[in-house]
Length: 261
Image 1: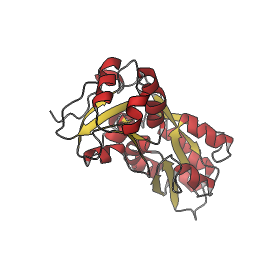
Image 2: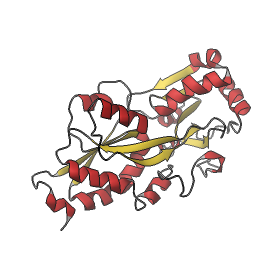
Image 3: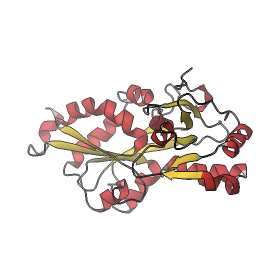
Image 4: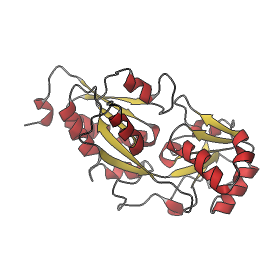
């Protein structure tokens, strides 16, 4: 029996709420999700910050959604807040952080911790996101490099659902940091370079069933699909690693990224 026929026939949509890091992979996987569910996928790709339209606040308002995809730490917080069901959580990707500059700009050296420190000190402006990468950059890397006092004042939080790369592409910021998978789709930026290995943070992104889902069993099947080897090629093409980390690696300085050269 087709799995979709076991669910209520009056539900025409399957709703997915994802943070930016998994958005490109999710969009590529929509045809597979629609075949599995027999429903049209409706996507809400939104910020995980604190704004009124942020992902956490939308869940807290009881917005109907079937699957939620965010960093593993945040997803488990949603479970504790009873916004996501505890049963069926699965990792779907691993994500590294990168830096980008505007198309045509020189390539800054961030191949080592010392080089990154020099680049950050020399930059006129630095962009970071409201998600995992931004918190890590400002709270951890700046502290470890001993430059928080010098660079925090010229660092700008990019929120409201806008990507750091888009602001860099407009020339409003000289350099910007975000998950590599969020930088890759942005036109007008070049030299997407991973953080040096000694400072890299690889985050796990996981999927779970929203407490508001009207079709939780079907949502659990979708979560299993997103975490499966079948989904892995789309995950890799988006700039992420499969959850096992044993497939083709996209982390570290071996990354083949857009350089414009």
